[in-house]
Amino acid sequence: MRLEMAEFPVIQVHLGSEFSYHTGSLEVNEEELKAFVLQDKRIQDATLAVAAPGEKVRITGVRDIVEPRVKVQGKGQVFPGVLGPVVAVGEGRSHRLSGMAVVATAEYEGTIRAGTGVQRSAILDMWGPGAEASRFSTLVNLVLILRLEKGLSELEAHTAIQRAECGVAKRLAEVTIGLKPQIVESYGLSEEKAKLPRVVLIQGCVTDSHHPNSNVSYYGLPIRDSLATVIHPNELLDGAVTGDTTRAMAPFPTTWDWQNHPLVLDLYQEHGRSLNLIGVILERIRFETHHGKEAIAQNTAQLAAILGADAALVTWMFAGNAIMDVMLTIRACEQRGIKTVLVTFEDGGSDGADSPLLYYVPEANAVVSTGGRDRWLELPEPERVIGPYEQIRLSSYPGAPVVSAKGSLILDGLDVILGGVDHWGTQTWTCGSY
Image (tube, rainbow, N blue to C red):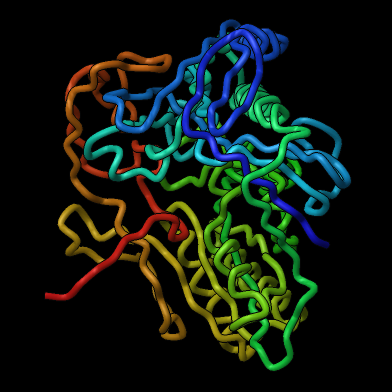
């Protein structure tokens, strides 16, 4: 299975009366997009705005972010199971508008009032310290501002927001059909080289049995009740894996992150050179019993062994007791002779003195850190606020104080910033010893 990804870079976006793309400039038919979004009766109002890197703009109520893509050759279409029927994707040719994204924001309070299932939105600063903390501040962002019908369940809200953002993203990418791309990259697993180690990416996916859309979906289906699942890495590029839109906070990857998974792209760069990439395993983690954690660890390691893996790159998302599932998976792989490397962010507390992870096993002796999430940060006052909220909560706990989005903010962690946690090594962090 081979996929060509044709790239059309975007350096500026204009709201106008037609769709066009020319040498990095994208014009968007604002009224057509709004009419498309409002076909969903769960969405009562929709507006659009543009936020460019360096502007003193703060975006509020962020639910998800997605890169515009469209399939022009091959079976199915991008975002299968979300925008259309479940048809296997990952081959043929797809177009992408690089350097830009659709940022979905929405006014929505949710029906779950406390606990891990409570709805959460994020903010994104396009300048200053907040921009330095997020990979998404470097993109030209088309902000979709939605106002949802009152009383929607989390699943209904998630579905409405996701269909709107993915539909808008696909429509934007359609403007490139028939045009010549700047770059075409080709992805496939068929060119294995003898004597190179066979490597699988094990991607831990936090799920929540009490939340209907459960953070991660495969072909639009929440993976909440699944055991380990093998997928082709090309499926990620075509949007077969999507994120959650009712709990947009830094420890949860966005749809953009799944589309541009840096570990997948880096493994592809080394495929046939220093290693043979053999696939991706989506592993459900955060089981609520130790029995469940042991079972998923053995299930995942056995699947890697059946694939013939010599080594596994292991990573995850979120925090808390889900690290136990990850560590037990590393142990189970190592016991089968599969060498592992863990790629993870750290907790560590605001001054970096606390334990970076909650649980360890001796077999986890090769670990790469992508940086911390518990850092104090002061955000200056913006010149403009885009999004559904002018008053925001900097924490999800019940009774958390409300502050003005138009003022300066002091954060005791990066969770509230979209892209504030580097899950898989997207950004170019470095460290030194003194």
